[in-house]
Amino acid sequence: MQYCRHVVRANNLDFMIDQYEQDIRRAASGQATMHHFDVGYDKLLTMQANQTRMIAHLATKMRLAQQSTIDEQHAKGGAIGKGKSGLWQRPAS
Image 1 (cartoon, rainbow, N blue to C red):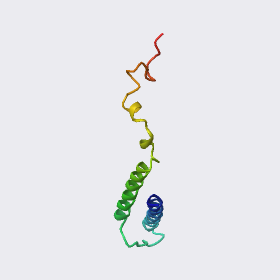
Image 2 (image 1 turned 135 degrees about the vertical axis):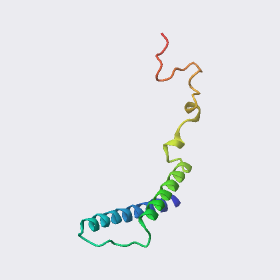
Image 3 (image 1 turned 90 degrees about the vertical axis):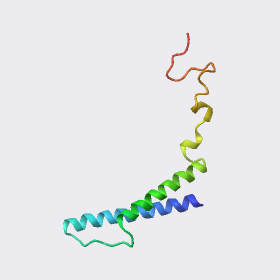
Image 4 (image 1 turned 120 degrees about the vertical axis):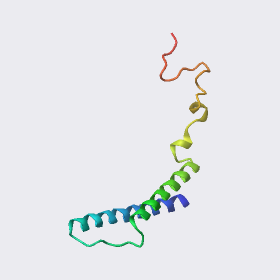
């Protein structure tokens, strides 16, 4: 449930950042005045980074991230040295 909430919040922040950037471009070209949000651009980017970090943390905890699905023995080289060759080694002939 928390994972979904963070994804929705991240999507909302992404929309707000996109709108802010469009407003900046319009204001710079003199086409429109700056649309003001309750928080500044830096604050939006900070909140987006926090949401991204939390999504990655929850995905790992729920074993959705690739990092959480790696076989620990194989990742530590457990297959090498037990009669099995690595992918980069030629099989013994």
